[in-house]
Image 1 (tube, helix red, strand yellow):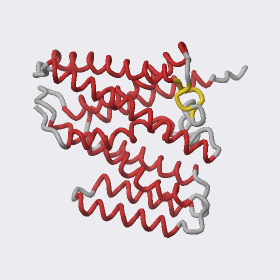
Image 2: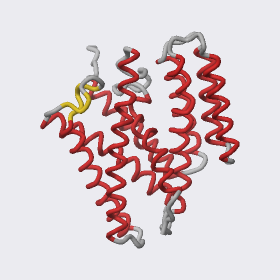
Image 3: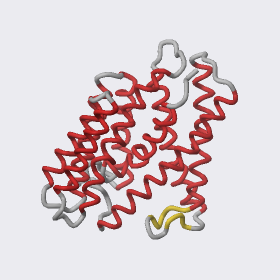
Image 4: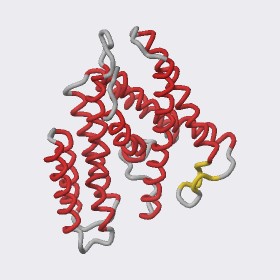
Length: 279
């Protein structure tokens, strides 16, 4: 029998068909499935960072990243969490005094623990969103946030590859264009408007025109910040001379390659919603 080799695109599609339902199912089900999913993703990121950045103590760094991640998920006192993450970061900084990539290895602590932690904090913070009959505000709003990041990725790819034009950051990511960024932002805004309109009508909640516009503008902000996060990860990989953060996800590369925008934008959006009152 002749062996069939899947193309990169086919692998990407098949992997997405498996990953997306799992992620949405966990978000919809809530505790403890969200907790487990977030921890697994964070642990994979910890392993990726400790292998992507060349070093002499891979296990020590991976365990330290996972410890910091666990604290972000289980320590609810902000002062205790702050000093725990600070001490862990200091520990890695001192431990890496003989490493070539000392600062990148140290960066792994806040990058993973705060980036992934903010996704988790935001999920439960969104429980305060409106009064949605028979539905979790955390699921509805976290899905909105994820859709904003997916939209800028999809819009950026489709528009950028079609229109091309001036490069966004040629030294960091030669394939990204300004047209792709603009197209991605427009798609994120459009998806936000449609999603909030549907949410308002399906769940019969009060969302004024100004509320929907606010979420659309937030969608644009998320899109831009997510693209910055993508460029930051691309610059790190280019500096290290690697194409993907790992090969954990067939057709996609590594976990960082898939959620760099999410974990970069999550802390900013979490801080925003922490400072405003949900209606």
